[in-house]
Length: 313
Length: 313
Image (cartoon, rainbow over all chains, first blue to last red; front, top):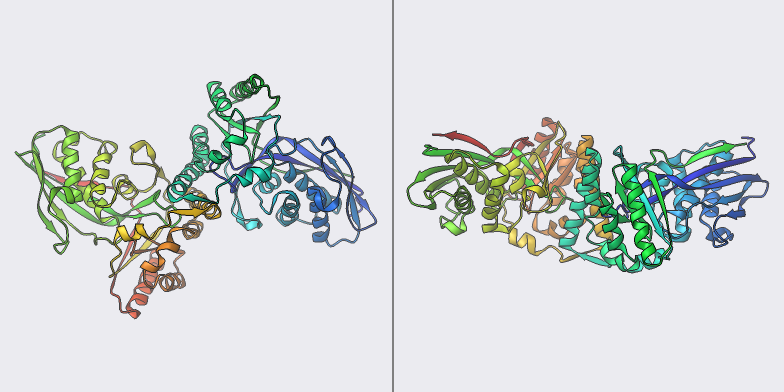
């Protein structure tokens, strides 16, 4: 309880997994955001420094996901002192990789660690959701896998509405982020208000196959089921240039399936090994290069654990 | 190849399982229909006798599900001779227990057995679907579990679109069929043409929980997920008198969840043992009796195997 500084890491997350719109997500091993919390005498959370965002993130308390999450964590801890936060932003913003969730989760975990970690991750969840809500609405589809790790089924924002699903061994993901902007609000706005009953049946069938494939550790079936989304990708595809070409190229290179990560524009290729993931990433990058669009490629694994404390001093 | 007579049994099925509308179904151990096929020189299938239907089923070839399935099976077998059929109807008609599917499947399996069973069950599937289609449309959500047994995920009418899901041990079902009529066509007509996006998300979440619960052998979670349907029951509840009261009574008696079987009016209570299933069945019957409605109650298990040949002479 005499700590003066704590740092925590929280990973990038891939939400939706295609057919699992708003209910499924997974944590990756890297990249992730790091937040350092330092104790100060005054109550509340303030940001003193942000690195890696090219000046794009707000310092203003109520508008910064990490600051809101830290403030909520202080409230849950019931302490009168406060924290200063330093955010090391390693995730690209508005890329579909759960950037706002990662900063919120890292902040909550760091602040909790600073005060001796009396709260469980389940108890920290509301603070993380409040942080996420500051920028992109009350939902836990990125926050839950970011905090708890693995693959999560999210049926609400409470801890007892979040279920851990099995992670099949051997999955490698190729994440390719083209250098274009898809604001989450716009990606939400293009979604249909309603879907036909037949579409709903097809979507539930794809989700059933997806969960079954996870349990059976069948990566090919998983990838096919993820691509079984008949609602969301159809509405968003026009926001993601070269989606069809990138998917075809990735599959040609050995990927088993490609979906939009979160609200995009990052594409997530599901592969059954590192060589295929490397080749798929390069193939997708080549498509974007051909189209005159820069992109970043990452190969990563699904992380069994989510956020973690890096150091407490 | 010199058989003159073959009999087959095909079980009742519970389609939908609540949240799994049009995609999930299961076979029960009993009751089931029996069809006897006897060789005749003339091509095609004709019905010579139907028992147990109180005279309600048509003998006319194109309108009888068993006769259509038998005719299609003869076509698949490529034989020039034909069959006469006797149908022993043990399933109540239009009760939501897959009556038409059971007769179709039993007929197809009997005819195949009569000719030495050269066709696999997967090869018989189209004949069974064609039989079902004669009365209630081209779908396999009853036919598939009836033919293959167990719990099936049906994403289309082809054999490679049907997936076996694990059957958790220890489940006992209480099936209560009130003596009212819910024609399948009417039960279809009341369904909404479209559903809100939030409803779709809730429905996919329930299906994800349901499949996860099957794999984890968690009967309580399974029953809760089945009841997570937010689309179909809401539309059909008014067709099933006393649904809320029967559900409450069954749960009070120990059932873990209650859903409409298929298009109803049979109610299916999910229980974790025979005493609870017996009590739940009695409790639901008491509700109907109180309302002046006769009902039949059955306790049964999920059948690992589906249709089977009873005898070949």
